[in-house]
Image (cartoon, rainbow, N blue to C red):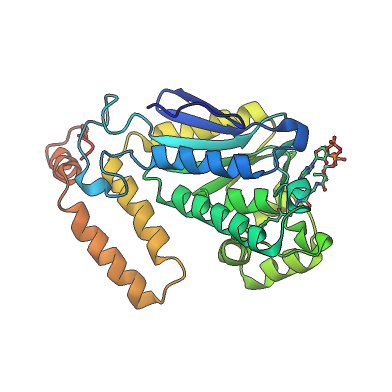
Amino acid sequence: MDFGSFETLAIETSGGVATVTVNRPEALNALSGKVVEELARVCEVLNQLGGTGTKPATGTGSAGDDGAWPVRGVILTGAGGKAFVAGADIREMTSMNAEQAEFYARSMHAVTLALEAVPVPVIACVDGFALGGGCELALAADFIYASERAQFGQPEVNLGLVPGFGGSVRLQRRVGLGMARELIYTARRIDAHEAHRLGLVNRVFPTREELLAAAAATIREIATKAPTAVALSKRSINQATGRPTAEGLDIEARTFRAAFGTQDMKEGTAAFVEKRTANFPGR
Ligand code: HXC
């Protein structure tokens, strides 16, 4: 999978795991306009997985080769050992007018939506600060793993700002409305264990190495499953989130139907009946 070259990101692919690292350690990986632009480009490439952009049910190629699914999961992290991402770039924001600020927010909204559309799981690995836009970027991943050093927060009100990269929408869905309000109004920072208790973080690890190894292991575990089924599950969950129950169930029924059109479903059910391991074709 050819990602191209980047100024502010480092990308490494190994064994079906793509690791995307925001690489501006001198600014604690703050999301400058350039980072946002480059994240958008990465998402565009990742959304080609499955062979048909965001329509995994009709993708072609094989899960086991480097055909339609050369990447089976994405790790999103930050360089330098001190921060995941310390937020929007505050220096850049000082020279923006209101119109440019809205464009900045909307550009990052597009990145978060594109990340949610990526048809393989995205795990945010937070080692150090995930503040403001950094916490919001992590919230756009499927789930978050953290090291003991992780610190989360939405400190925008300290700057006379409000969450602008999706925090007012996604944080309440993850931790509940009351807690999201408290975190946003107080700008309080929480550590990895509190974030875990709140459901913001799935798992906490002592070191960065263990954090990244665990995320890669989870991706490898998921890679033994039907790629189209994982992709469709992700799509169904994202589309149903925040909708009334009946609408969510309608989305689920239509997605369930789509799964019935896949070779993966035929292979998975046949393998069960024949008491053998499934060999999913990935389409
Ligand atoms: C630009 C940043 C930055 C940021 C840190 N730096 N955060 N630059 N934007 N968000 C830079 C510092 O200016 C400094 O550069 C270098 O990174 C190291 O940071 P220090 O402050 O010296 O480190 P430390 O004392 O350890 O403090 C770490 C910190 C602090 C607690 C994370 O840097 C901090 O509070 N950063 C801002 C966090 C924040 O408020 N984020 C939310 C932003 S608003 P120099 O050149 O001096 O070495 C937001 C809104 C999103 O995200 C929506 C927008 C539409």
